[in-house]
Length: 100
Image: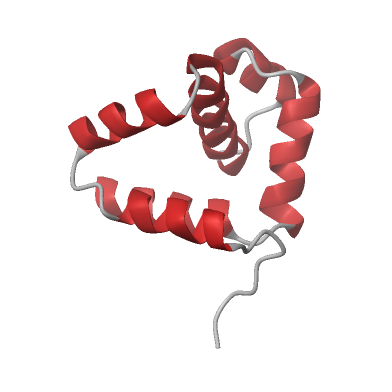
């Protein structure tokens, strides 16, 4: 059947459909620059980097120093890694495979 998100609605479906149509990094920059504020986009990027560092077993202080993330953000990402929808794990695995 597939994953059932608590967030699912027609607007989020349309957003994800649009994201899946992006073909390269330049298109991502163009779209996300228009749809997100700079702060929103930086926060998303920061969370992904926090997740990468947590997967490498970095300490909270190392992560905070490298990313500028608060301990609350680091905790939130760690909770999502351990108890979330496995979205971080999915993308981290794909990124690792891409880097091989």
